Length: 270
Length: 361
Image 1 (cartoon, rainbow over the protein chains, first blue to last red):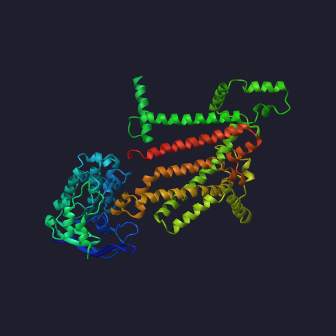
Image 2: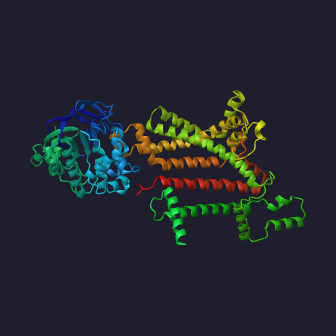
Image 3: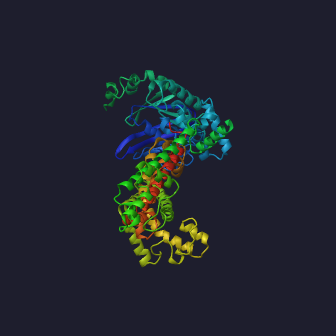
């Protein structure tokens, strides 16, 4: 937490005339930072803007993003993506290439960003697969994504994104496509890797209980702006009404698909 | 005994692995099933062509003996042809003859049908192959680039080209090409497959003009063969390109929206690497099918194009036979075209299965 890895200043993201992220500023150090909010709050777009992979039609319209001493513009991602910033998407079922063996996908960042020989890459990939929890890395190396479970697929995805030793890892709801029982395992893996390598982690999530247990700091987003920032341990006693409402809104099967309760509407009043 | 059995099974295993059935269990049966389905389809084709002889109004006996033959000659010929036997027996005999490569005598050319077809089909095969190579290479390239730059200038150009290829009758385009490049500019030679100079001196070794002229060592013969091939091949290639461009653009564009493409970009892969390393392996199946179907439609013999360019191919042979009521020639040509279609499609299915091995669950 001593040194700042990523500095975001007044970031705005828009689709046409609609402003989706309205000028947010924050920094990320060697820590686990969570960004939480409802669907549509702009938390995923913030994450995707950092790595320059906004969806078609959505553009970064302003602000400044600095990774260490490098300013990230909207072009020129050479040596940044995959090398200095990793990105773990939501669902490994779609995010892994069905036509490539897992070993090849884990190695790819090394193919793109290192001069290692094929043998060295393979060794590093096997080592990485072992670290993320494959009991038999050789077999995982040869497997196609369709041959492993969702949890193992997400482990392979994390291996592929961490292998090149990035300064920063962005995980966009990395557990929401997985079974409940697996979620903590994947988070523990991410947390362990973050601590071991000294990289920074930005976790996008809508599950505040999960975040309270896992993260160091929390940013709360609502309608494209940051409304609250606090230590994860303080979530249960949050002072801001929106954060409190999010904390109280415990998602369940009964509330699935409905809006958050009235407490949130109050905070929407200017 | 045991030894031979295990040797056979290991041969099947090697073959089946090549064909993409990575799991040994069921691999042998998969190959056998494939062969069985090809055989069954071919049998069906022979059955249908045989039925055509029964349904056609042409009397094969009259065709053989002529209108003025006596009743006794007619009866003898009928007996000779075996037409007095039950249908099942006739079909059995037909099957055996076809199996031996005997397709009968063509009344229009006075030659064995098998010899006629060997000559004409190789002409069509040569033209179609050159056309599909040009059409597939340019069509795939255009389709892929159009997908990468969707909404851009190349995309618009690709759309216009495929619209033109689809909507303009290709024989008319062929006529225009002849008018421009042969009659006006004198860049290309006229219709036909070779200059008259070489046409009757060339020894047909393979039946493919390009190969035979190259083998002949006669100066100018090969160039003549190439020059004659260019215009019809380009016209047919444009026709193939139209469909290939449109479908390959769609297939690639759909894949570019997939999440794994985002992952590849997040790793730092550039646009070309994304398309060629990540997307193409996921669309080889559809792309192969698109190209194979275009090739098959060219092999059916582009009758009008062959007529315009006086190309001695199977399409033209079939048309001439149809107007002459030459049953044996019609059947032989139909059988050949049908078999080529079946074989090509079955091979494509096998290749598609091979590209999808190990990953589709």
